[in-house]
Image (cartoon, rainbow, N blue to C red):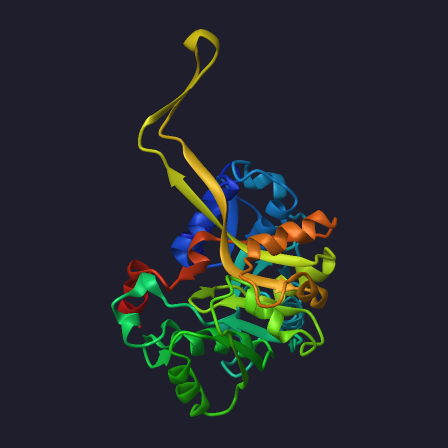
Length: 351
């Protein structure tokens, strides 16, 4: 049993940041916390995200956020009882405990259930605005020929990959903002099989990172997603919606936790140049704007018509009116910026 989870093992003294990095490296969202040979519990990506939202430092140890009330399966329960627990929790993994609370087995969703049985979760049908009017200068010279949203990834284009992820959770109404090479966008997307309901709206001139959304005033009837046309987030977007509602946000920014290691000793000095501290090759961590947002409907009223207007300006307007702007964190590798050559080449190499 331990061989099956050896890449998922982590010590309780490990930091939240190191746990996120381990999840990224192994492609999982659940780790098993062991102190020596004693099983202490499981740690999920959701646990870490909630901790970050609640202002926990990424340098804190994971033992400080371990949920002692996690639901597990027990050897005294029937197979169907344990399966029902997994279904209700949409659990990727289920630890199986004996009567003395020792870990004796682990059930994985993809081993327990047929491929046709997916984790049951209510779908949402929110409008999705895709900002697809830019020139894609970071992907030149490819974008001299085709617009960035139509750059291929395997058998799909970037914009199809984005829309498919939203379609998977129940979103089917797409509003695509176009400008650069819009005729090619119309032709390609209109000849697709119509599982998407797409409405185009065109900027006569570039209107910034959010300005064109003013053209949708009066057309949307609910909170809506706004996505750049070159980013993919490895996250169930319903988690973002749940967070947005629970915190009564006016606007939610999806952020990626990104760390940088400085390859030098960093010195802090004080009065008269006296050294106060020396940190050898410190690691700095930031929350990066991914380019995915969830907005309440009345945010559109804050966007002026026909003017260049950026998402940063909208955020400042909302905060200036004492509105709530929330940040939903994802791990560094959960965010893929396909508008960069280095990332694009990495993605197509694994298709």
